[in-house]
Amino acid sequence: MRGLYRLLVNSFMVLAIFTTSSLGGGKKCIVPAETEVIPIPEEVFYIGVGLLASGLSRNCQCDINNILKDTTYGLFVKSGWNYNDYLAIEARWIHSPIEKDFSITKHYGIYLRPQYKVAPNINTYATIGYGRTEVEGAGDNNYDTLTRGGLSIGAGVEYSITDSWGVFFDYENLLYNEGIFNVNSNIVSVGVLYTF
Image 1: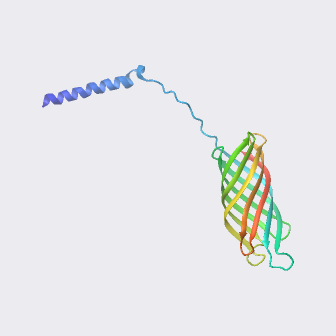
Image 2: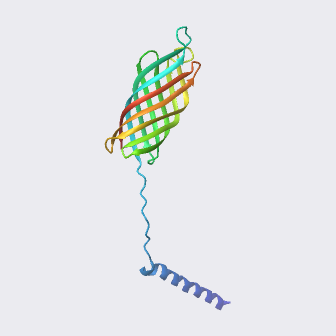
Image 3: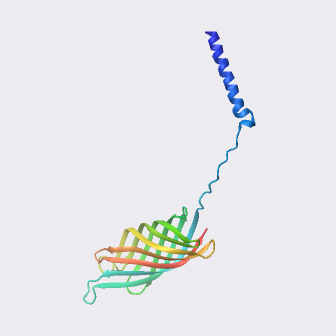
């Protein structure tokens, strides 16, 4: 039994020495790996600031006209992260306090932004996500505030002037037939964009 034990131990030692010397003991057996280095997608942050026009329409409980319309003007801010050339995540904030008639619109939201470059310096995109909108002058009691959260969609185009600076044009639908007055609200914005 002792002889069998010694034979097994010696066999394992010879096998271990042979394996170690063939794999790591000599440099002749090591072959360098030839692999292609895949670049990591460039991930960039951006911020945009612009001016907007917000259009609003709602039903009216009045004798003269069945539809009331208003246009307000204000500030548009967006900030996002380009995950890759085809998808970004974006946050938005708007405030249109310069009123033409009776309404003021405020909005903020978070969006997925599928995008596609139609030319090296022209990027087109769509936005879809959750937004919260407040419209003064469109609530349940004629001129109260209407507050709604839900789906918000839009589209836009960006033009790069340099690697960092660009301009954008954007459209977004905020409300569609909301509240007892069937309020509709859309914004159009234009501004400058800076990419980090």
